[in-house]
Image (cartoon, rainbow, N blue to C red; front, side, top):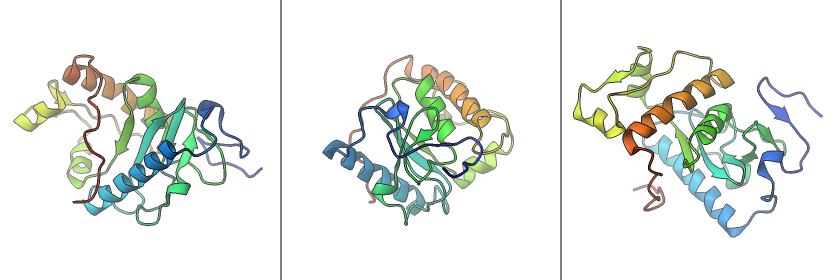
Length: 193
């Protein structure tokens, strides 16, 4: 077995513990994979991510189905999406996104979350460099709910510390906006206009 980068556990080709019961690809899984790839590509087309930055996952069984690490949207194939446990375990040679811990933290802290879309829009990146919450200076901030949009401290990408910090910020924002209501169902799949 080859060595794994820090924060990853490389396992044999059997399904990871956190993804029991989803070893064979079903029609539903095929549709989810297609939607993830379409969403990932649309993020790039709209300029919300550049290169292999950003990632997309969907809660899947006891784990997640997530974009692979280091593969740009225009090159990713549905079969390359990774079934991963919330502990980072995964099957096969393709590794999950380096930000798998952020996705896992969101799924652990927000049981109603069905998907995570992690982007790097230029304006958001610039604002996050301030390392402080975005105050409700404009009515659009109200769209996020609460009095501000939280910002985590600067932490190294791909670490469980960053994943946990993001996971800690979102439930507060979610509860302020939704008052503990579950998220609404997706009205239509994301497709390019």
